[in-house]
Length: 387
Image (cartoon, rainbow, N blue to C red):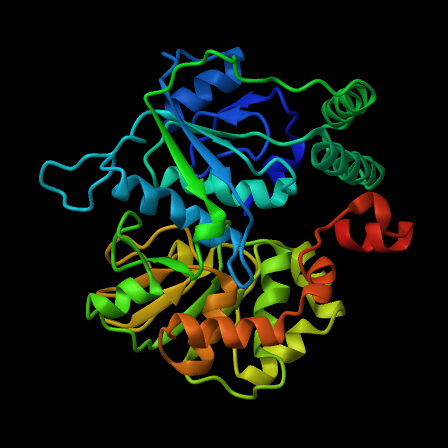
């Protein structure tokens, strides 16, 4: 997936663009545009832009046991609906995010790979762009990893060598003198949305077929929506290697699942690492269909679910017919996806929490939710990853 690579070339003050609506950097800021405008920017190094207003989303409190960052992604529209700033109905629809910059604060210690989950989903909010306020430490960790990756790309003959070296040097310069942009203390916003993570005690999903139609598992049950699932998909640019590990840990030792399960890592590097760590054998025991790295079902360009299937997916969006003709798609976390695959349906909040907290112990989280730090692997491992 292009985002997995392009993001690794970014600096904290990068301003960029791309013709994919999910060109949403985890550091810096990007404004997706049409292909013609992107070509103009590539040739001239600039693009016409009227700076939009911003909406501030401020997180506070502590992430609760069993609750994931993907639940915080869905907590943004969930809270906006409560605040009267977003409506699901198309007639007279309100959307405070549309055409504005989404600024996110209160999660400063996130890894950059995690920050992309939040910035990526700003496309589903119809936001013009997104920024995530991070501390220096996770950014330094990310850049040091990317410097090592770029150096190996150069060593293996990737081009353009001079361009890659310039980018690596800019990263070295920033790490030597890390300075982050800060919002003005008197900044004005179109709206401020406050989200207390301590109050979110169960997963939040996007219901068929609208990424704005978000509900907790309890609210899904109260609304009488269908919960039986035909297929489950784990993949898309909304996922990273830590989420695949978490999904597999929930499935470990459970045998064949109740639904058709699709697994598709974003990159070949993720694929190779997950194979070496033994996670492919877990999915094999679960009876999963393993897809080649890429978009797969998320774009519907490599495969599709059966007609009129009910699907739980970790993908970016669930518009009509995107995953397959007539498909009805819920969106949520990789951890919840594993439980859905085991049960063949959306679980209750209590079922989900019992399973996930039993499978993913606190002492396991550092090993599960870790990322590809290329500067911390052996030379042989790095060479094999890039080849």
